[in-house]
Length: 188
Length: 188
Image (cartoon, rainbow over all chains, first blue to last red; front, side, top):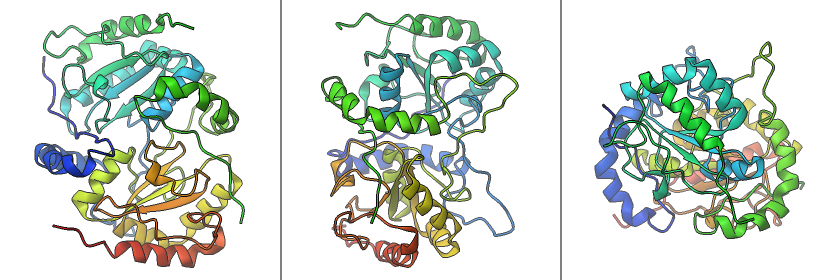
């Protein structure tokens, strides 16, 4: 099982100033790699060369609906009573890319994702520790019940990286999506 | 001066469960409107009708680099030593749309935004109260210094909505962008 290193870590507003120097050191290398795939933020494009607009799907399913922020995705999950599927990945990580290709080309997964899930993909970690139960590696896929419970029980086949999937794991991922669709009972 | 009502409010992880019912009641009407412009999340598109991939720019400058999350944008602002420009808007708000058209078609603004700023636009409020110094109306534009100071001093021309701009305010916006480019002195 091969995964990639940590994504950049999001910070809560209180911790931002204090933790930023730490984060800087630990994730600078990752971000240098990310930035080159993230639209060359530092170099203005020459006027005769058009940039391609960045999409929220990032290639994980261009015809699916992707949400921008975790807050909005949670809100949508609750209001639509659908589980949220959060995909953590990096454009420069070959394992992420391979999983993306398998995910995007699998019609069953795309259909179930479209009809049954609130979707988001992230290339930057959130501040919610529940979203990295066993570390901040990529690729990893977490499900969140509309009751806001992280489904830490829905795991892949790798004991050392519980939420990682490989391109050959599409059947398991599909079955895990079906599991996530069985919503937890809430107290309401 | 005419602006639109509140965007949906993001919640901190602690407040999520407790506040969600309140939020539900207060922003449901807004979200019903938003959702219709946000890619029809509930209706699968017929197979013969392709969805257009959603972009991070949402039309505010398709050739600019837009960041997905506030955490990442803050991080980029600091690492690139550039101010962050955060545009709050709603697809269903005509004032937002009018401002977007003026913003996207103004070459000076697009050039300065491209070269001098870290950019993000949001259709859902964050949990950071500093980002709504005088309310959560849209459209509004806030600048954040790379030192993570919200530039509450950089305001438009409307006393009741300090961070709102109208399409006719592009000169003022450009001048405010220039002001934001003059970074605050930090203790380093």
